[in-house]
Length: 114
Image 1: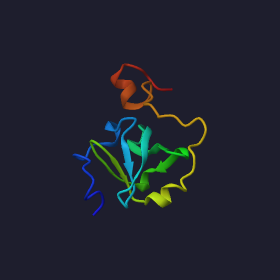
Image 2: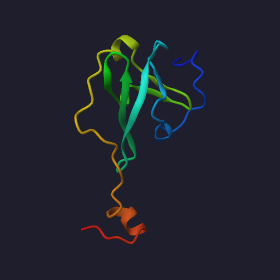
Image 3: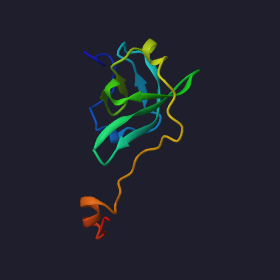
């Protein structure tokens, strides 16, 4: 069972995770902290997290490697050793935002898509 010894609080939606939240590996070793959440709002899915690992800097964690998001921590499906091999985030990576002028959101806000 993942995070069985980590007091991470209640499970929360990934969009509630804040910068600085601790990140733990599947081996319950603290890896680093969350720098930002990468979210695909259009498809309503998590793309991944950019995490800060001491001594390595920013690294990208893909969504399938995220086991749990909770009030006080994020737990991964990979170990601390595996996390040390994560790639840096792609340059220009940003949090995706909804397009308010298209689709149902556009109609809700009185805008029309092309």
